Amino acid sequence: MKHQLLLTGAIILTVVLWASAFVGIRAALVAYSPIHLALLRFLVASVILLIYAMIQRVPRPKPKDFPLIALAGFIGITVYNLALNAGEQTVTAGAASLLVNTAPIWTTLLATTFLGERSSWQGWLGIAISFTGAAILALGEAGDMQLNWGAGLVLLAAFAQAVYFVISKPALQRYRPIQFTIYALLSGTVFLLPFSPGLLSTVSAAPSAATLAVIYLGIGPAALAYFTWSYVLANIPASQATSFLYFVPVIAIVIAWFWLQEIPSLTSLLGGGLAILGVVLVNFQQRRKSSG
Image (cartoon, rainbow, N blue to C red):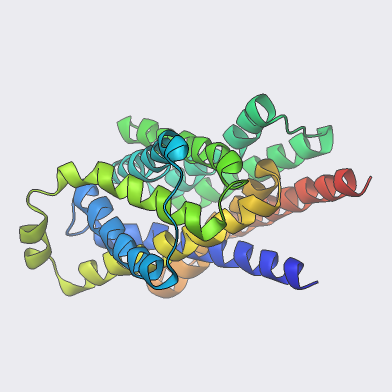
Protein backbone atom coordinates (compact mmCIF):
# COMPACT_ATOMS: atom_id res chain seq x y z
CA MET A 1 0.00 0.00 0.00
CA LYS A 2 2.80 2.43 0.92
CA HIS A 3 4.62 1.66 -2.33
CA GLN A 4 1.46 2.30 -4.35
CA LEU A 5 0.89 5.62 -2.59
CA LEU A 6 4.47 6.69 -3.30
CA LEU A 7 4.11 5.69 -6.95
CA THR A 8 0.81 7.55 -7.32
CA GLY A 9 2.25 10.62 -5.64
CA ALA A 10 5.30 10.56 -7.92
CA ILE A 11 3.08 10.35 -11.01
CA ILE A 12 0.85 13.22 -9.90
CA LEU A 13 3.77 15.45 -8.93
CA THR A 14 5.60 14.79 -12.21
CA VAL A 15 2.54 15.53 -14.32
CA VAL A 16 1.73 18.76 -12.47
CA LEU A 17 5.31 20.04 -12.58
CA TRP A 18 5.81 19.21 -16.25
CA ALA A 19 2.45 20.78 -17.09
CA SER A 20 3.53 23.98 -15.36
CA ALA A 21 6.73 23.97 -17.43
CA PHE A 22 4.82 24.92 -20.59
CA VAL A 23 3.57 28.08 -18.92
CA GLY A 24 6.93 28.76 -17.30
CA ILE A 25 8.78 28.45 -20.61
CA ARG A 26 6.40 30.93 -22.23
CA ALA A 27 7.01 33.38 -19.41
CA ALA A 28 10.80 32.98 -19.59
CA LEU A 29 11.10 33.23 -23.40
CA VAL A 30 10.03 36.86 -23.13
CA ALA A 31 13.58 37.72 -22.04
CA TYR A 32 15.69 34.58 -22.62
CA SER A 33 16.77 32.83 -25.80
CA PRO A 34 15.91 29.12 -26.04
CA ILE A 35 19.58 28.24 -25.46
CA HIS A 36 20.15 30.49 -22.43
CA LEU A 37 16.81 29.43 -20.97
CA ALA A 38 17.82 25.76 -21.11
CA LEU A 39 21.30 26.45 -19.76
CA LEU A 40 20.24 28.61 -16.79
CA ARG A 41 17.37 26.26 -15.95
CA PHE A 42 19.65 23.24 -15.68
CA LEU A 43 22.45 25.11 -13.97
CA VAL A 44 19.92 25.83 -11.22
CA ALA A 45 18.84 22.18 -11.16
CA SER A 46 22.47 20.99 -11.16
CA VAL A 47 23.39 23.13 -8.15
CA ILE A 48 20.46 21.69 -6.19
CA LEU A 49 21.28 18.10 -7.09
CA LEU A 50 25.00 18.54 -6.46
CA ILE A 51 24.29 19.85 -2.96
CA TYR A 52 22.02 16.86 -2.34
CA ALA A 53 24.65 14.47 -3.73
CA MET A 54 27.35 15.85 -1.43
CA ILE A 55 25.13 15.77 1.65
CA GLN A 56 23.91 12.24 0.95
CA ARG A 57 27.28 11.08 -0.38
CA VAL A 58 25.78 9.74 -3.58
CA PRO A 59 28.33 7.38 -5.18
CA ARG A 60 29.75 8.01 -8.63
CA PRO A 61 28.44 5.90 -11.51
CA LYS A 62 30.47 2.93 -12.70
CA PRO A 63 32.82 3.82 -15.59
CA LYS A 64 31.20 1.21 -17.84
CA ASP A 65 27.88 3.11 -17.55
CA PHE A 66 29.33 6.50 -18.54
CA PRO A 67 28.36 6.18 -22.24
CA LEU A 68 24.74 5.28 -21.42
CA ILE A 69 24.41 8.08 -18.86
CA ALA A 70 26.00 10.62 -21.21
CA LEU A 71 23.66 9.56 -24.01
CA ALA A 72 20.62 9.82 -21.72
CA GLY A 73 21.67 13.28 -20.56
CA PHE A 74 22.40 14.53 -24.06
CA ILE A 75 19.12 13.28 -25.55
CA GLY A 76 16.78 13.71 -22.58
CA ILE A 77 18.11 17.04 -21.30
CA THR A 78 20.12 18.85 -23.97
CA VAL A 79 18.32 17.89 -27.18
CA TYR A 80 14.84 17.80 -25.65
CA ASN A 81 14.99 21.21 -24.00
CA LEU A 82 16.77 23.04 -26.82
CA ALA A 83 14.30 21.67 -29.36
CA LEU A 84 11.24 22.39 -27.22
CA ASN A 85 12.32 25.92 -26.29
CA ALA A 86 13.14 26.81 -29.90
CA GLY A 87 9.99 25.20 -31.22
CA GLU A 88 7.71 27.09 -28.85
CA GLN A 89 8.92 30.36 -30.37
CA THR A 90 7.01 29.73 -33.61
CA VAL A 91 4.42 27.06 -32.79
CA THR A 92 1.24 27.91 -30.91
CA ALA A 93 0.92 26.54 -27.41
CA GLY A 94 -1.96 24.26 -28.40
CA ALA A 95 -0.10 22.81 -31.37
CA ALA A 96 3.01 22.31 -29.24
CA SER A 97 1.04 20.38 -26.61
CA LEU A 98 -0.29 18.07 -29.32
CA LEU A 99 3.13 17.46 -30.81
CA VAL A 100 4.90 16.90 -27.49
CA ASN A 101 2.21 14.45 -26.46
CA THR A 102 3.16 12.11 -29.26
CA ALA A 103 5.97 11.01 -26.90
CA PRO A 104 3.93 8.14 -25.37
CA ILE A 105 3.34 6.75 -28.86
CA TRP A 106 7.06 6.90 -29.70
CA THR A 107 7.84 5.39 -26.28
CA THR A 108 5.47 2.46 -26.80
CA LEU A 109 6.97 1.78 -30.23
CA LEU A 110 10.53 1.99 -28.90
CA ALA A 111 9.74 -0.06 -25.78
CA THR A 112 8.12 -2.73 -27.94
CA THR A 113 11.16 -2.83 -30.21
CA PHE A 114 14.02 -2.57 -27.71
CA LEU A 115 12.63 -3.51 -24.28
CA GLY A 116 10.39 -6.39 -25.29
CA GLU A 117 7.29 -4.71 -23.80
CA ARG A 118 4.01 -5.71 -25.40
CA SER A 119 0.75 -3.82 -25.62
CA SER A 120 -2.65 -5.37 -26.37
CA TRP A 121 -5.19 -3.96 -28.78
CA GLN A 122 -6.86 -2.25 -25.80
CA GLY A 123 -3.59 -0.50 -25.08
CA TRP A 124 -3.22 0.72 -28.65
CA LEU A 125 -6.86 1.80 -28.63
CA GLY A 126 -6.20 3.77 -25.45
CA ILE A 127 -3.20 5.46 -27.10
CA ALA A 128 -5.33 6.36 -30.12
CA ILE A 129 -8.11 7.79 -27.93
CA SER A 130 -5.63 9.79 -25.85
CA PHE A 131 -3.88 11.15 -28.91
CA THR A 132 -7.24 12.12 -30.40
CA GLY A 133 -8.10 13.90 -27.18
CA ALA A 134 -4.76 15.71 -27.22
CA ALA A 135 -5.42 16.78 -30.81
CA ILE A 136 -8.89 18.11 -29.98
CA LEU A 137 -7.47 19.87 -26.93
CA ALA A 138 -4.72 21.45 -29.04
CA LEU A 139 -7.19 22.67 -31.64
CA GLY A 140 -9.41 24.10 -28.94
CA GLU A 141 -6.52 26.01 -27.38
CA ALA A 142 -4.75 27.12 -30.55
CA GLY A 143 -7.71 27.94 -32.75
CA ASP A 144 -5.67 26.70 -35.69
CA MET A 145 -2.72 24.46 -36.37
CA GLN A 146 -0.03 27.03 -37.13
CA LEU A 147 2.67 24.55 -38.03
CA ASN A 148 6.00 25.69 -39.43
CA TRP A 149 9.67 24.85 -38.95
CA GLY A 150 9.12 24.98 -35.19
CA ALA A 151 6.73 22.02 -35.42
CA GLY A 152 9.60 19.82 -36.53
CA LEU A 153 11.63 20.93 -33.52
CA VAL A 154 8.79 20.13 -31.11
CA LEU A 155 8.38 16.71 -32.74
CA LEU A 156 12.11 16.20 -32.31
CA ALA A 157 11.69 17.06 -28.62
CA ALA A 158 8.88 14.50 -28.29
CA PHE A 159 11.00 11.79 -29.92
CA ALA A 160 14.01 12.71 -27.77
CA GLN A 161 11.84 12.41 -24.66
CA ALA A 162 10.71 8.95 -25.72
CA VAL A 163 14.30 7.83 -26.37
CA TYR A 164 15.29 9.12 -22.92
CA PHE A 165 12.51 7.13 -21.26
CA VAL A 166 13.58 3.92 -23.00
CA ILE A 167 17.29 4.48 -22.30
CA SER A 168 16.48 5.09 -18.64
CA LYS A 169 14.90 1.66 -18.08
CA PRO A 170 18.07 -0.51 -18.07
CA ALA A 171 20.02 2.13 -16.12
CA LEU A 172 17.32 2.24 -13.46
CA GLN A 173 17.82 -1.48 -12.87
CA ARG A 174 21.34 -0.70 -11.64
CA TYR A 175 20.90 2.68 -9.97
CA ARG A 176 18.36 4.21 -7.63
CA PRO A 177 16.08 6.82 -9.27
CA ILE A 178 17.73 9.78 -7.50
CA GLN A 179 21.19 8.54 -8.53
CA PHE A 180 20.29 8.20 -12.19
CA THR A 181 18.50 11.56 -12.15
CA ILE A 182 21.64 13.27 -10.84
CA TYR A 183 23.92 11.53 -13.35
CA ALA A 184 21.70 12.21 -16.38
CA LEU A 185 20.83 15.79 -15.48
CA LEU A 186 24.45 16.75 -14.80
CA SER A 187 25.50 15.13 -18.08
CA GLY A 188 22.89 17.08 -20.00
CA THR A 189 23.98 20.31 -18.33
CA VAL A 190 27.61 19.70 -19.34
CA PHE A 191 26.51 19.48 -22.98
CA LEU A 192 24.81 22.89 -22.56
CA LEU A 193 27.90 24.64 -21.16
CA PRO A 194 29.37 25.56 -24.59
CA PHE A 195 26.39 27.93 -24.96
CA SER A 196 27.30 29.90 -21.81
CA PRO A 197 28.82 33.02 -23.49
CA GLY A 198 26.44 35.96 -22.99
CA LEU A 199 24.41 34.30 -20.23
CA LEU A 200 25.44 36.74 -17.49
CA SER A 201 24.54 39.79 -19.55
CA THR A 202 21.20 38.19 -20.44
CA VAL A 203 20.43 37.55 -16.76
CA SER A 204 21.33 41.12 -15.77
CA ALA A 205 19.11 42.58 -18.49
CA ALA A 206 16.13 40.25 -17.97
CA PRO A 207 13.14 41.32 -15.86
CA SER A 208 12.87 39.60 -12.50
CA ALA A 209 9.65 37.81 -13.46
CA ALA A 210 11.35 36.02 -16.37
CA THR A 211 14.36 35.07 -14.25
CA LEU A 212 12.14 33.76 -11.46
CA ALA A 213 10.30 31.66 -14.05
CA VAL A 214 13.63 30.11 -15.12
CA ILE A 215 14.61 29.42 -11.51
CA TYR A 216 11.25 27.75 -10.92
CA LEU A 217 11.75 25.64 -14.06
CA GLY A 218 15.10 24.51 -12.67
CA ILE A 219 13.83 23.61 -9.21
CA GLY A 220 10.42 22.10 -9.99
CA PRO A 221 10.02 20.71 -13.53
CA ALA A 222 13.75 19.90 -13.77
CA ALA A 223 15.40 18.76 -10.51
CA LEU A 224 12.31 17.47 -8.70
CA ALA A 225 10.22 16.19 -11.62
CA TYR A 226 13.05 14.30 -13.29
CA PHE A 227 13.65 12.49 -10.00
CA THR A 228 9.99 11.58 -9.47
CA TRP A 229 9.75 10.45 -13.09
CA SER A 230 12.80 8.20 -12.68
CA TYR A 231 11.05 6.65 -9.68
CA VAL A 232 7.97 5.99 -11.83
CA LEU A 233 10.02 4.42 -14.65
CA ALA A 234 11.82 2.21 -12.15
CA ASN A 235 8.55 0.68 -10.98
CA ILE A 236 6.22 0.31 -14.00
CA PRO A 237 6.66 -0.39 -17.75
CA ALA A 238 7.75 2.59 -19.85
CA SER A 239 4.70 2.38 -22.13
CA GLN A 240 2.33 2.44 -19.14
CA ALA A 241 4.24 5.25 -17.41
CA THR A 242 4.18 7.54 -20.42
CA SER A 243 0.43 7.12 -20.83
CA PHE A 244 0.07 9.38 -17.79
CA LEU A 245 1.70 12.20 -19.76
CA TYR A 246 -1.59 12.71 -21.58
CA PHE A 247 -2.73 14.41 -18.38
CA VAL A 248 -0.08 17.10 -18.94
CA PRO A 249 -2.03 19.31 -21.41
CA VAL A 250 -5.13 19.01 -19.22
CA ILE A 251 -3.27 20.25 -16.15
CA ALA A 252 -1.43 22.84 -18.24
CA ILE A 253 -4.75 24.45 -19.18
CA VAL A 254 -5.73 24.70 -15.51
CA ILE A 255 -2.38 26.25 -14.59
CA ALA A 256 -2.54 28.69 -17.50
CA TRP A 257 -6.06 29.61 -16.39
CA PHE A 258 -4.74 30.83 -13.03
CA TRP A 259 -1.29 32.06 -14.12
CA LEU A 260 -2.12 33.67 -17.50
CA GLN A 261 -5.91 34.04 -17.12
CA GLU A 262 -6.49 31.81 -20.16
CA ILE A 263 -10.00 30.36 -19.93
CA PRO A 264 -10.30 26.91 -21.58
CA SER A 265 -12.90 26.35 -24.27
CA LEU A 266 -15.48 23.58 -24.33
CA THR A 267 -13.46 21.93 -27.11
CA SER A 268 -10.42 21.85 -24.86
CA LEU A 269 -12.42 20.31 -22.03
CA LEU A 270 -13.75 17.63 -24.40
CA GLY A 271 -10.22 16.85 -25.56
CA GLY A 272 -8.99 16.64 -21.99
CA GLY A 273 -11.75 14.17 -21.15
CA LEU A 274 -10.79 11.91 -24.05
CA ALA A 275 -7.11 12.10 -23.05
CA ILE A 276 -7.99 10.94 -19.53
CA LEU A 277 -10.18 8.14 -20.91
CA GLY A 278 -7.29 6.87 -23.01
CA VAL A 279 -4.94 6.85 -20.01
CA VAL A 280 -7.48 4.86 -18.00
CA LEU A 281 -7.83 2.32 -20.82
CA VAL A 282 -4.07 1.87 -21.23
CA ASN A 283 -3.55 1.35 -17.51
CA PHE A 284 -6.56 -0.98 -17.24
CA GLN A 285 -5.07 -3.34 -19.81
CA GLN A 286 -1.65 -3.11 -18.14
CA ARG A 287 -3.19 -4.08 -14.77
CA ARG A 288 -5.02 -7.00 -16.36
CA LYS A 289 -1.79 -8.20 -17.98
CA SER A 290 0.24 -7.93 -14.78
CA SER A 291 -2.41 -9.73 -12.69
CA GLY A 292 -3.14 -12.35 -15.30
